[in-house]
Image 1: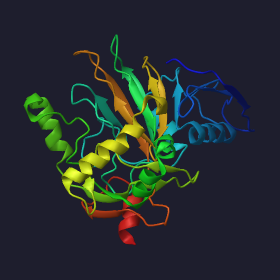
Image 2: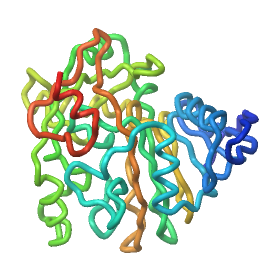
Image 3: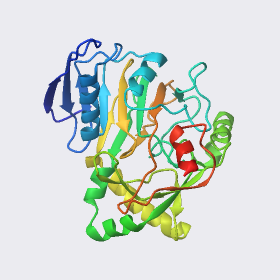
Image 4: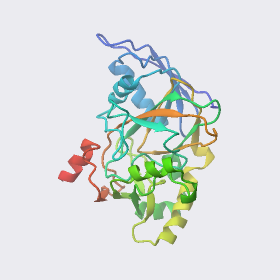
Length: 322
């Protein structure tokens, strides 16, 4: 990753806690991304270190830890510092023996479509973590975009329009989706599993971040259309809004190395796995932290239309009980 270097060092320590060390945050771009060093994620973290990482995540939205050779238990421990974990996925099977760990395996499909994780449920994850296990000799980077920067860049008339829109999100839009004729049998089988339970949720197009108050475009690859608009009208508007999310200025490009961890704020980012590594194997493990129900600037919450995701996250059980 090429970057502008801005270092911020935070000393984190606490009595009767695990080793904290010195947290150094190096900015990777104007709008998103930072590299964090000076902390050993294989050890228990103290409260001050966890708070420092959370603050950095809220500010930079995506953090890279280059030296983090975590097994599944270690990744779940780290993600658990930031909240209750979801199960691996509403429909896709977890890693054997680790029900909260999703294998992101190039053999099962490639996430080469811009998306925010699991937005087809009413309470999508707040935070996603990825740990690299197998990386290709070249390519296979992950692009992460700031949807807050995208919203701020909108001209006022477009911003006013976006503020009023609601989007229909559904898992019929698989993030490994390709033209039907491009599917092999393995990909078809994965897509059938992905859509084995149908979900549909109406989310505000502009979501207010529950911790920072920032507004961001909450759209991406699971959007089928906008409420009250035709499919054709929706596609045109979605293409226009997405162009602001994926503008190069608003991105950070993560190059993967073995034993690396990336954590990003799923509430105000989108991401894309670059499919530029031929048929080489690529395997990451994902663990996600449960999120709340999105709301717009008027405080109106997202609405579940189809599908029961109570097995996926406690937040869904709480939302369905209201």
